Image (tube, rainbow, N blue to C red):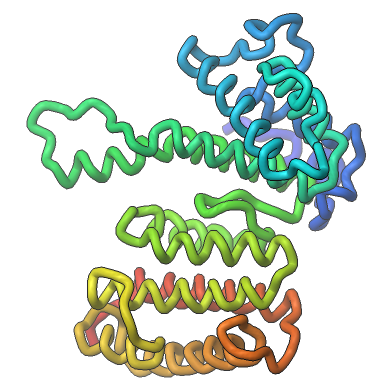
Length: 329
């Protein structure tokens, strides 16, 4: 089998694909941001285009129109949600696609990371909304469960392509955030991301777990904006909502410790000795962090970034074990 040069000389990767570590978006140079744009502009537009038709030249006619709508709507959302700061100067003067595109590109290259990721968040929501209430064509004789499964995958298909590409390119440049189905979040070790976060977030994308996803989405957002008390509270609420839905089919009442026991009694989550000890220890951590640093009670301390991040990681591990663990003794 023919081997590439870096397969014969592994040290070549130090030149071809160096490890840049994890960096905030604001640490990147303008040149680096321009290069990143070129690698992902297939989802946006070609900045060198001489006209709208040439700028949005990727894909078929429907996809061109979808891309135009996403860019326009995401800029309109940022314009509406950040009136006092006026990040969308050209769009505010002229509500058209050209102005939206010019503001979109300028923000991506020049603005603070909070503005950039807010804009990209609006764009990602637009990607999801395009197919959110639509269905693919149902094949003759296709069973309802198979059709529902295929429909869920189809609805997220283009978002998943965007997520995969943007995370791959961001990873090459050491950008310290990653895109998930619930929003942007701080990047974790690749193994944790691949084996824990991605399977759990894909599982939670089913509408059955909407309240769980909503709580995690808020947790990620609050964490990103450094409101760690809010993040902790939402993380614990997500675990509580998961157990309630698992047991009762809807969000209801019950604290985590009692819900874990009920779920084990119903054989809904693992109940072997290792799992029971792990759940007990995790539940204690959730309770302590929520009591001391959450917003549900008077705070006993101001939680740190490490507190909030650790709790999110524990919550993901908790769910991953519930989803994949053996339910039988």
